[in-house]
Length: 565
Image (cartoon, rainbow, N blue to C red; front, side, top):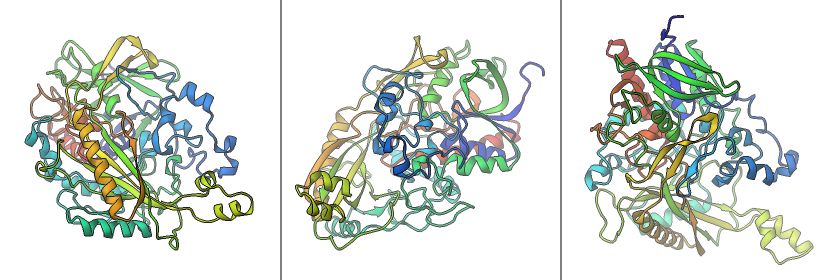
């Protein structure tokens, strides 16, 4: 093979939510595609080794191996909501072997397998509203998005129809409806909470969570079994992941090649054509290096992974990293912050439910919509995710003063009704919130470590105070007792809604990507994961990443076939 011979039409770096979508769309449009994944091979169904392990058969009865976790997974094991456990430890990256620096405390949660975090994500799937795309230009925090909701709306629909999103249409402009499967059912207390909140505030809506868990058979995948152990993997394909959905679709075309254990070192750019010409990788098992060549490259390595690759791809043509014409690369990192409120809800002891529903309720943003509320001392807003369920026997047993037969009787009964509301607030994009490469401190595979210097600011603090007050008022209006505010999402990275670092924009001096997710100055290189985000919005971002990816692929293939790439 001659030097720099084209081996593939396209290379996709990463196999998670966006990488899987890029592979599906590119192959279905007739391109020969190579997917490079730094992590290990995990096969759908075969790789979910503890998917059906009963609690009484779990290693150490399901208790954490604290010594192992502290030694090898000190960051990953602290992920919230039980996403890391004995049942899926093999999905997560080894922190000891892959360190990073923290100028300020920062959680970087990473998987290390084919499919990436599409195996472990929360599956909450919401469209952004038009206001989210206009906010930067309106209030001056962050650069103007080069797209609006209308640009992305058909691609939201395209994605929703394939992945399957269950939910309820509500008719709110700021919280756009989509293509939904039947919604999941609220509990009795959630229905009461909805009725009481909506009766008291005409600008607030309580709806069931819109989630990429199937409520009916869809595209050959089975419906959700209501086990709520999704992060072990799901052989039914009842929740959307790359392994159950997009990669199999790409494989059906016969045009897909997947190479796991391939750590991308850099993207090469031809100094004559100024186009991406190849991708250099390190074999994670042997340490050997290789270069693959293609006509276009989609960088979908996750927010910080993609920024790292762009930074490492420096050359005489791009001395500060690819697309870094104005020092925007690695800056304007954003996440969601928030606060939580718990309470007891009396008066519903005769009500119960069955199964473990994999979603909760959602209260869309109602603060500072379309402008500034008179009583708000902060910019932007927040939404709430929550739910109401009965406490289980373990907490009941821990809190009871009973003994003997009385204790056995009480723990055999359903516990109290507990309601929870947790805010997801929008962090403002700030230039000083950034990540850099430390060339003097090598990490995994001898590559430079990333150094995070990110913190929440005064606006986030004020917003969280307001969110706590509003959550308490809504729970009290719903009849709650003993409301407790609990700090959650107080540390950047905890929400795993990592965004920014290679943001989209009109001006190459202020952004890394244009309105089609092309890297400024490298027209055949596209970045479509969370690094492309110019602001954070208030809803979970993964659906937007997928829509951006499908839209960018459509554009890239048209340009390629027209001979312009």
